[in-house]
Length: 177
Image 1 (spheres, rainbow, N blue to C red):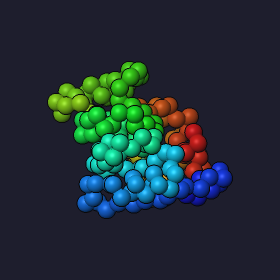
Image 2 (cartoon, one colour; image 1 turned 120 degrees about the vertical axis):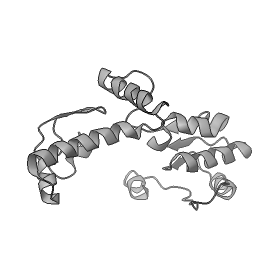
Image 3 (cartoon, rainbow, N blue to C red; image 1 turned 180 degrees about the horizontal axis):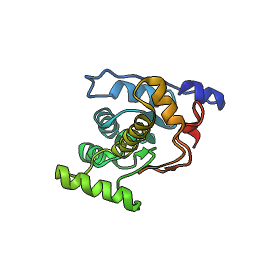
C-alpha cells in the first residue's frame, strides 16, 4: 500500500501494527491522531476491525475509518455494534441490496443449508474462484501449468461477482477486467 500511495504523491502520516492477541488499539489510534491522520485504512477481518472501532468509540475518535471486504457482512456489524456506525468498506460485492438472480439464489441456498445469514461477502468470490478452477482443470488438467493454461483459455465466465469476458488472457489482466 505504501508503494501505491507514493505513486500518487501521498505519504502516510503513520503505519501502525497490532498483534493477533491485541484487543485494545489505544496506542495505535492515539499515535495516528497525534500524527494528523485524516483517515485510517486497515485491511483486517472482523475480529481486528471490531477491536479498532470499539477502541475508536472508547476514545471518542472521529477520524474516518475505512476497511476492506473483511467487514462487508453482518458478522462485523453484529460484533462491533454501534461502534461500526460510519465505517466505510471497500468490497467487490455485498450480500444485501440489489442482487442478480443467480447471486440471490446462492445467498438463499446458503441460508437454507446453514440455517443462518451469510456473514461474509467473500463467499461469493470464493464460489466463483472454485468454479473457474474447476472449469480450467476439467478442460486442461491438474498440474500447475495445465491449470494456468486452462484459466487462460476460458473464453468467458458468468460468475456471481460479475460476467468475465475473459478470465485470464495474459498475466495480471484479470485484475483489470
